[in-house]
Length: 110
Length: 112
Image (cartoon, rainbow over all chains, first blue to last red; front, side, top):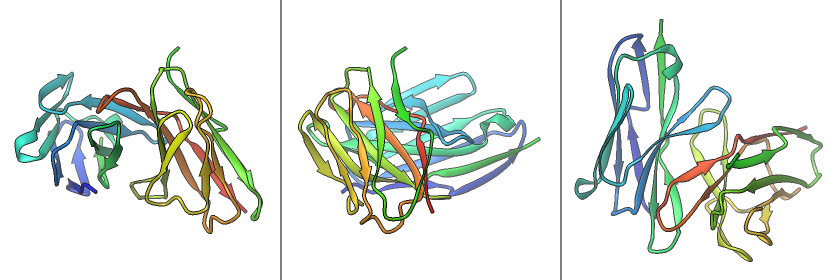
């Protein structure tokens, strides 16, 4: 299978700080997504980004498929940004499997 | 509203009983997935299905069974053979090749 590694595993920030989360993957992929798991456990879709750069408010993501990594940027952190951020990739010529990284636990203090 | 519905949100069962978790989607997606999450851990794939009447084992299929009789539905049965079934279970669906996947709200299963 494909290996998905996320770093850092834990991140603690003061409100207002910026942060960068990284996702490395071991082989070519069809799709890459970033999710935020909220305190109730639900996975919220942040970005569907197989390549290129996208922005949504204070969040942006960049995927460099040829170098097999993706970055999630969070600017001006808020306490509501706390939670676990997961990177997931699709691999395969058919629908295939969705492979997850272990996640980054983000804690934002007021 | 389009989306994925998992039910129930919370489920309590006695050890030795089989239990079935429901997952329904109205997104017209072909692929559906079941994941298990333990406290402080990532997501592990149990089963997935790419088409009706077909499904594949994931990494931790032992003690679980699934069916895919309808495109909209992918129920997961946690059998008595599953040694440690207490966990958070998440269902997902996706459309065509490499398209965006969406998750339900999850079911927290506690076996006592």
